[in-house]
Image (cartoon, rainbow, N blue to C red; front, side, top):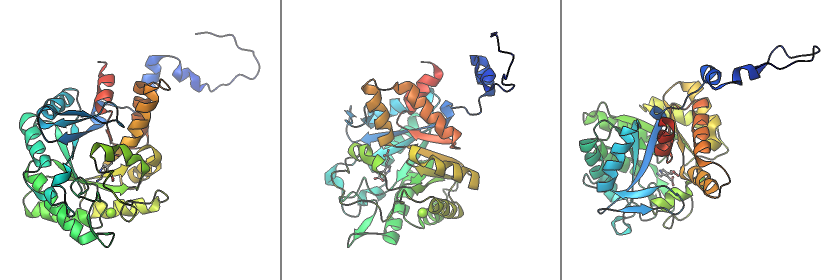
Length: 335
Ligand SMILES: NCc1[nH]cc(CCC(=O)O)c1CC(=O)O
Ligand SMILES: [Mg+2]
């Protein structure tokens, strides 16, 4: 390309030179998004041949085990390294203590075993929290309106052990109780699960962006009040670093920041400050916003999704949980 220049006052530095064609842009790209950066969250329901759409999450479905297993195999074929499992528990199986969470034959454990048997080469991240199982929708055992810490940790330990026994590769406590990482780590070691990884939702904020997820797992209607006595205040950043430091000291192998886009500053500070594997959760409300705008033709969903995910990488995330993982993997592979 040649353009005539006025011989006065031309810029010697032209950053646009490195943007002039596709191959140069590729050559100088600082960050890359690959299928290896994706964790795909999926919702599991009881029954057979169940494929239930979720109104607030277009493109996402609750799947029964018989349909989940081939979907996970497809994700594996697309190069996605890991799936995150979330069970949808019928309301009549819920109780105030979330007892079903510790049952070795609950839906979650059956899903883990079925996937491990049929698709052994994909990682399974099992969410550890009581909210799918409690009749009040809180992530713990409630007394006098307060979620009890130690009683809840005991339940989370049981839940982690049944999931690890079922073959879960990564247990991921998303509850924000204090001290649970250490308790779970000790229990896993005590049971010989020395290689089970713990991904700590270390900096999880009390967020409005979880709305569609609560539709998906049908806890929204049950939940009274909010989760502000255990999930973090969106105003705080230094506190997130203290939370991460605690979870690493207690034995976490990976840490999660959640939600994603409004908290990219936290992702960057965690990565720079600790250098540990750092994941970010592009949560249901963030996904719903892209889908809604895309559905109206107000933006291009595919392009906005890839740009969003690359933004997570640029902020320092090693992997991103996103409901758009399969879409992104297809786009990255050009099919
Ligand atoms: N243990 C609860 C849990 N695990 C994952 C999400 C939200 C994920 C999303 O919005 O995509 C939540 C919601 C909550 O804290 O109420
Ligand atoms: Mg904590």
